[in-house]
Amino acid sequence: MPDTLEISERTQHMGTENSFVVLGEVNRMLKEGKPVLSFCIGQPDFPTPQNIKDACIKALKDGKTGYTASAGIPELRKAVADYLSRTRHIKVDPDSVIIDCGGKPFIMYVISTVTQPYQGHEVIYPNPGYPIYQSQTIAQAAKPVPLPLLERKGYVFDIDDLKKRINNKTRLLVLNSPQNPTGGVLSKDELFQIAEIVEKYPKCWVFSDEIYSQIVYDHEFNSIASIKNMQERTIIMDGLSKAYSMPGWRIGFISNAKIAKHIGTWVTNITSCAPHMCQWAGVEALNGPQDETKKMIKVFKERRSIIVDGLNSIPGFKCLRPGGAFYAWPNVTEACKLISAKDSEELRTRLLNEANVAALSDNHFGSRNVGEGEHLRFSYATATEQIKEGIKRVKEFMEKNKQ
Image 1 (cartoon, one colour):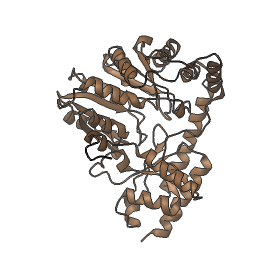
Image 2 (cartoon, rainbow, N blue to C red):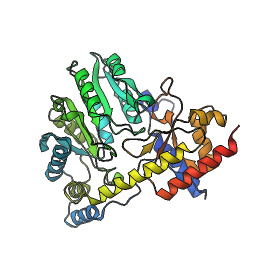
Image 3 (cartoon, rainbow, N blue to C red):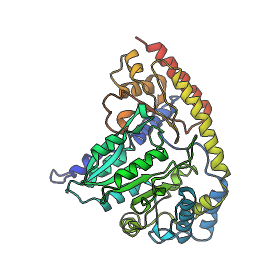
Image 4 (cartoon, rainbow, N blue to C red):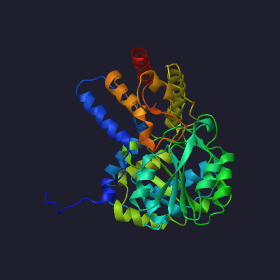
């Protein structure tokens, strides 16, 4: 290739989602015949419910294979509006709903829509957090501002920390509850406090990533959009990947009355529309029987106890009980010391190569917060027997390698 052909700096420096990088390592090892157990990706191990698959097959037979309006088919936009109205206790109009290929594109669309490049506009996001919040903030030439999630607060940020970080240049506050990677859940009282702070900054939008909204174990899910005066400035993002075991179907959605048409323009520019037949499957997912989703969540709750208790039985591991999603986030600071690993990434690598257990380390989810120690993420969206075997392997590894 001629030396004059260049790759842009923002492309070269763009972050990634390391769960897929590690998954690539796992797949390579599996092809080599190694008995790797993977806890690295948030993908439910349940099949998509049959009624949803049948709806897609019917759509294909009925010729639903062409382009749709960029905003999505009217039937799915209405189903989403009804679902959000019912579960968030607010009134959502179908015209405020936009459909696209999963939830991830909306992160880029929203940051691009509410920030001006190279103007010092700031995006506050949870740290540790979903890595695309940071990478897309940088890619859209805005300033990323990490907000530390604290173990002593059950992996919720300190309200005073938010007060210190938000200012007149803040254009977006990202909330993710239940949270990836920690499983932390914002309480209604905490959401009220956040709303009071945001209210003082009229140019600040809230992007509420609620993709795990149905996977809450001990309390009712609460959305900041349900608080008085917050719906108009809150961009709700949700989708079908997690609660309906549809990650490969690529159906996500957002809702906000003011921003919807602008997000629709982004969809037109980038993807044109979500897959037609998958949108009809989405209609069935939201409007059809919910029994399979309820069964999945019940199993996730049972697995939560198994993996948390199991991790806490391992020398050097200390794991809080997550309130939602399907991730365990053990503190492994002492475990690293016990085996003379310099950090969680070295521990992760050794677990993969020596114990055939694949997890993710905290540096895959942002910078480590000062004083918070080292962490790993284990997804328990996998078979119960695999969880038990994985715990056994990690325990044996620690016993074997203790210094």
